[in-house]
Length: 144
Ligand SMILES: [Zn+2]
Image 1 (cartoon, helix red, strand yellow):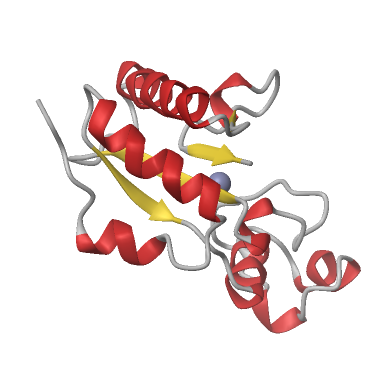
Image 2: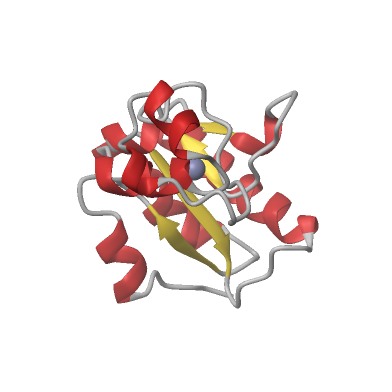
């Protein structure tokens, strides 16, 4: 069993930390569960859009997000204290999901994490998995 990163996944690694890229490229060779990169680098614009979902103009401006991004009728997608504080903005994080996409089967995320951890240890890179966080677990998220 051997998988390859798609062109789309490779494209999403642009601007991502070189060591984290190496770990992902090794992990795809080791993994029992095929995966794809959903997001790497996140721009300020994307952070503003994310933060505005589920928040009022007032809640946005209180955190330095321009009011125009407020979309209070949508579901919230981020709980960051600093809307621009995500490691994604520095290219130090990636979100990886099973291929074909499956948001529900956690065993698939566990398999991806197993491969990522093996690759990280082989390459001597310290990688943190959002699935290991004590609170507000983030299963697709890996950061250096
Ligand atoms: Zn993430």
